[in-house]
Length: 203
Image 1 (spheres, one colour):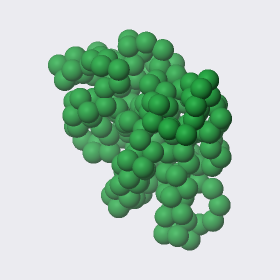
Image 2 (cartoon, one colour):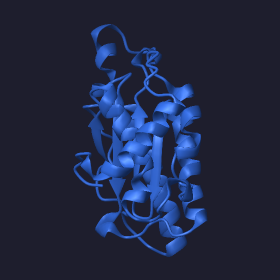
Image 3 (cartoon, one colour):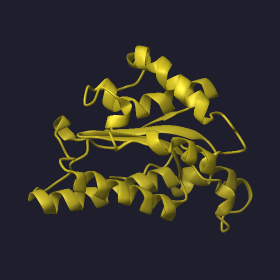
Image 4 (tube, one colour):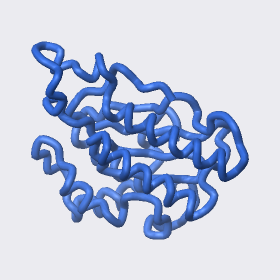
């Protein structure tokens, strides 16, 4: 997967997602899911991106991510610092590249497969306001329910639902206290009835 060079800016939220080629299953067992999630948090720490929400399903995944502040890149000076991601590639893109390549190697070796397993470049959508942000948090965590993998959100272990309040508390950007646990539960209940209304390129 090529590292994306433009379109991702620091201290901004992005809904990032991708799926397997031909919509094939690429997560079969608990070991597959755990391996992927292990690498998610490993590469998060390496790249400095922030994860506010995630869901891993048999043939695709969703993340709500934040690009870190470019002021951390000490060797970039002047006007270039404001646009460092355009010149050097974003940390989100680097995270996605490392994660996808790592899991592809694992999958190919385990299943005696060769070649790519993901459908080209990852997709990303800029989260323009807090209302959309709250909807995406709920949408991502409810994705297994939407796809009828389970009837109850608590029955799918590969989402951020159980740890969401902790994730949010640790990853708030620019002191934006956009969601607490009570608000999250209310939004989940509301979205259970209208889960298909969020406009996405694919789900």
